[in-house]
Amino acid sequence: MSQWVYEQFGSKQGFVRFIYHRALAYAGAYRQYSRKPGSIADRRLVFICSGNICRSPLAEVYARSLGLEAASCGLNCGDAYPADPRAREFAKQQGLSLEGHKTVNVRDFEFRASDLVVVMEPSHLHQFKEKVGTQYSLVLAGSYCRNPIPYIHDPFNCCPAFFARCETTVMESVRGLYA
Image (cartoon, rainbow, N blue to C red; front, side):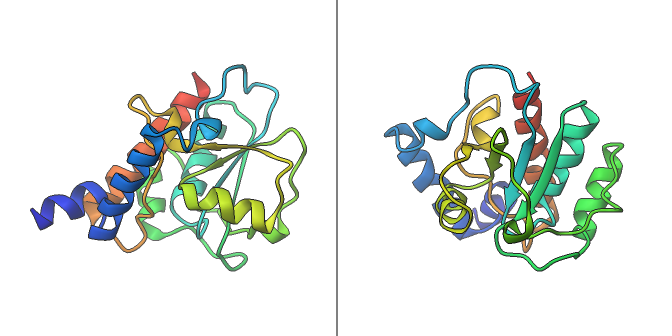
């Protein structure tokens, strides 16, 4: 059972958070941050995660490979760190490159009024509003997955199986945005 939890949810805490946020989503707590109707063709997608080394940089380069304008930054990161080596390898396996990626903290990022800010976890919604403001349009990345989910767990300290699963989910969410 434990191995399954680590491979599917990253950790016991990730499993609990997944269930908790799924229940809140069913209750409608994240409805305003779910898939938004309309075109994203004229908007820059700004992907945000905690450290800007695993989830958001992959989302950014994948979105750009699809012809979308995209950027990424982190809520709790230092500046100018490279992407996680596993994220770089995963991207390479997908025909993408994270070799030139350097982290950017939200405090240093220049947002535009027309940006669609795409966060990976519900906690990022509150953190973003607290650090940046409430004037931007926010959505949960997982709401664009084939089977919508409100929470994409941080794979940073997780096993290789979950890391790949998480990054695959991030790519699925970008495809959903693109569709």
